[in-house]
Length: 118
Image (cartoon, rainbow, N blue to C red; front, side, top):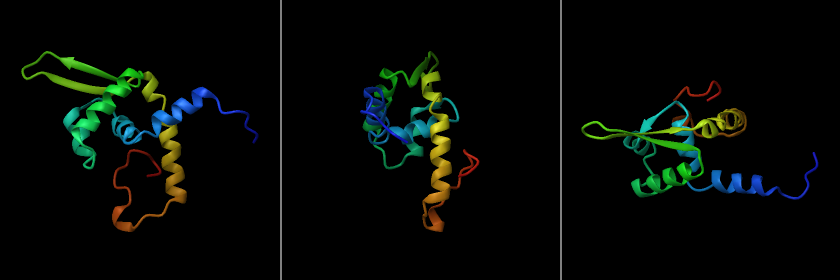
């Protein structure tokens, strides 16, 4: 497979997706809308400030939308946009590749059945 010069769109996509925590946040949101605290608790090594910053960045990029429900107390949910959900096949492929090629100790193997291979 031959490649020409790196496409600026590809470069921007890789920069965005490889930013610390972005892929984990998107992966966590694949099943559907979630509240900040749920995402925060699902990624225990991620600080609340970094999560907030990354969600804002992803919202600016059009991958995440923030819905505010005027309840008492106010409920805020984050979900992937169509653009964000379009990344699903990429994550499925990564999960499949990891399942075939990445070895981890038995005690930390995947326990969730989000993807058929993981």
